[in-house]
Length: 561
Image (cartoon, rainbow, N blue to C red; front, side):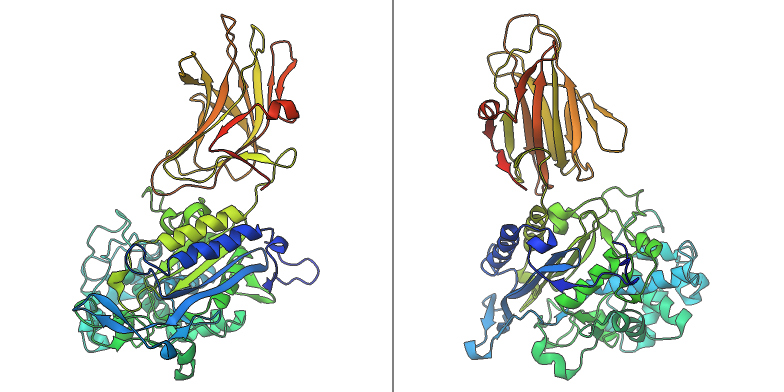
């Protein structure tokens, strides 16, 4: 989004209705219902004790809701395998301003600080880390680059128990002596060590600690007053509890943790680490989201130039299919972004139950902060609440019909087949022509939309090749009679030449949408269906009530949005 032309400032957040944000109110309410369902068995234990949900589009926060409990359990009983609930009077309800241990969402702040150094020419993405931090270059790490750290392609393993060393020097020695598990640049392997190394790199070239950089360069300029490392004791009543941290499931014996960083390595590093340790609220994270969607500015403050923000929304991991990554941000990760995922959708998750998703395509954002390791990390599995909320948020962004009040919508069900069948018709003995508007956004090859023609009375169908035209682009032939994947979330014009018939059999056509796998995209829409005969007469026009009434929908429905 551009800066405000009247005063040169970037848009700032305001609270408003779903309608004022260009979102569908009913879908946002269903998002809350979806999230609340995981306060119960999911499938055995609750996924979280509570959560704060925040969703918006443009400059409007249209949903900010707290559900469940910030503090519910006294601990975990390993003998019974059950959580131990606190008396009702000692439990604490979740609030919209509850502060959360963000866990790995902290990596985004570290990455932004690194991109600021790149913007200033103090860091070169292709440069070797060891050229700035010579100690890092030992044990085969000499050729690891700054970009490889930020895109998790350094080859370093996921984790080291740095907390087992009693001194900071010993912890650093473990990292200096660590050899890559794979040659740098040959694999994409998510690693906390990458962002710890970025922290050390930043602290070396700036001669300042990471927490000071966070405050001075991000949180203070943006007014994020509830975001910091090592929150003071006065914040504790407002902080969500995390884990009853004890061996064997935790590396440290700390008991119930609240107000101190959950991650063992970050805790052992004094609470300030490149990979974990930041605490924040949903509202503060929304400010960060708006800043990045604005191109690096918020109000009168600018923390990055637009071209620098673009580095975080650009995939540098083309050599590793399925692992798209900008500098610091993950891209198009359906396992938590759900139907919000596009090639440019950026985000991250945190082990404590947090997530942030930014979709520049629709200028929308979704924040889900949960305390899912309360009281013990092993009770949670998967990422189902994140997907359910992201799917609903994607559905809340309307797709306006091309013509009339409604369009045909395929739905977003997984493992389903939906058909929209036109009535039998006679376009004449020559070639007829189908035209319509088509919108689709699916998981590539897991959600496919087919145009088909009946070949016999027994129910056989064959594909019909067609052509799609996106506004401002050249036509694309679809010889297989199908589309899948990303279409830009815009309407395409479709035309298909229908084969001449050798007999008097009536013509039957249908759109068939088939999905498989655990995730779906936003689905498909069809509108403005027309068929012309070989003499250019209109044989079928969906805008005519008598024609529209003859369409047979199985799994499809008319939708105004």
